[in-house]
Length: 176
Image (cartoon, rainbow, N blue to C red; front, side, top):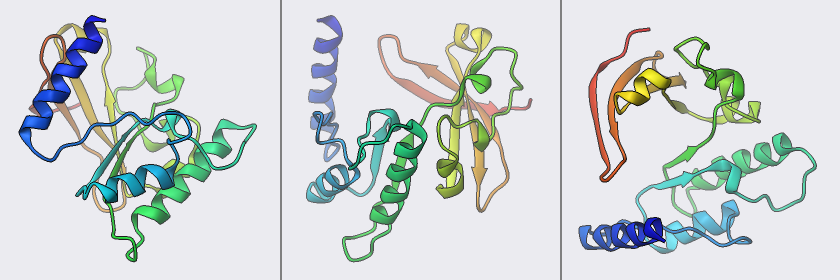
């Protein structure tokens, strides 16, 4: 109940800040077509989807990998559609278990994205957020460029406070 109250208060504060929209579509409304049409209807300049595992495909798949592959390809086609209006999109996706172990190498790569090689093959720029116990204890997070078609991998150490407020800032470039 307390979290719901904080969420409602945060939504009210965001509404006062201007044309930012945060929505949580119901089941049946989490398809690429519904989400992108809704963003265009609202006149959004860009779309942030958190996260892939909650999105729905138009067809049923036994395999999560196949489901995610369909969603990724449909999303890329839709947001690049000039007839409907291009829509820059950021999609949050979890890393696989091997990448999230504390003893894993510090730098993550596109192949560490969970469930779909289609994601690593399709995206133009892939970022990853990571923290181990030490980094978490210091209210920090590491932001990695996991892969890009136009830039080299790079990482930054972020101030990442989400307890009573949301504070994000870059502390410095992060060296492995």
